[in-house]
Length: 624
Image (cartoon, rainbow, N blue to C red):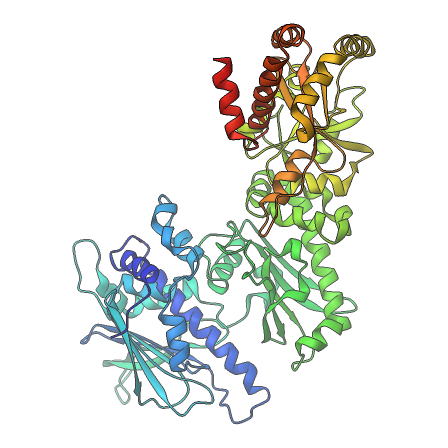
């Protein structure tokens, strides 16, 4: 008996102990897996004529032994495949599975963590898997009763493919598992969830027929077994658009892409032109758990005349729209197209251009007429679009800038750049923004007090890439981006500027003394009128902002050498200024102590660590 990995065991325990209420979804998962296995073998059959092409999925019900069997004649699995596919569940992120997903629906949980096969343990006491892989002479049996582990052994099996035998649990007060032994139940589930599977799903059913030889006026009837195909098998994208409903699209998406939430957006299109193709595109409601990891593989399923030739064709979807799932089917492509040919293929490039335009048009439509769902999309996939703006030195920024959204200090919700510019105050020349780790922390920054008091709208940048996006864009509709944390940011009138200059000149020796006390920690010390309640703040000179310094130094293998040129700004109206003047006149050492405390306070307000903990503690102690 082999043991499941620790994290897998935890997930399986949750499955067996029925944290899910929608138990019937196990059938959809197993049928989808069977269809995927046949897809793989069907592709091989294009070049290997020895492969039989009577592809099918068979369901068998055995009421006496309480078993449901799902069998396919697809590509099958080796013993190593069994170990990899059935010995490990949801390799990423499962340790915190239950803790991080309390309150989510059954569908969200299973879809997010890819534990579809193991959903069968919701209804099973035991599962046996018999399989024989393409190119192998040996068949194997995988067997498990749950968390205690599993076994793999050699066995006998006729033909390629996989047979899964589910031994149903006994009926209880909470659930009647015997329902899955009823023909009507299985028939309705296949019709509901798997009608568009491209291979026949067959099941022996009992029908009542008139006995042969009995007269019509006195007929006698008998029950006979008859093989019945339960699904229509017509790919959804091959149906006339008028016959396809939103419900059809939702069910197809959930079945084809192993998700359990309806997509936020479905697109059905038949494109005719230089290249003719049918496409179904979907925007998921949630990002897969590994979406922002290096392991995530984007791409749509590529078909030629109904035959899948690539499961994830990433050449058809740009990285910034990598969240889009879908199917493309074209008769203009070659069935034996390879990855190398794909990158050079004129038809593929034409399809890719068409898909990008279609996605862009649909996203624009969502922003204008389905704002609630677009905001949900942006919450899940906005980072992908932002990275698309920044990548390649901004080569795609003009395509993507109108899809960006940022939190508005005034409206307290996400707004587009076009909406911000439209609402700018008269005479305002720049788009104001502030950076921080969260909206709450940005709202408490000293630098934004005066701007907010004057009614200016400020965009809150909380993602590490946000300020880099602003730097790449430079401007929007002629309005340049301006950080409130830049040293030259000012909302003063000419009169206020003159007053500040005069006061700065008056106190220049004090400011120089504070600068000398801090040394190279800051580039400059100056008075400011941008503060209201806070005594000090840090701003930056040059191209590297304080927020960019944080981002660069948080990267793997960062040596911490990236430094913004910091300016310590002291409020020209705060009462702390009088204490500094007194210390400058009477006690230069005390002024140095004040300088250290104010500098470290400014760092903390900016979300930076204390630069010199010992020096700060000593300074505070001395003052106390």
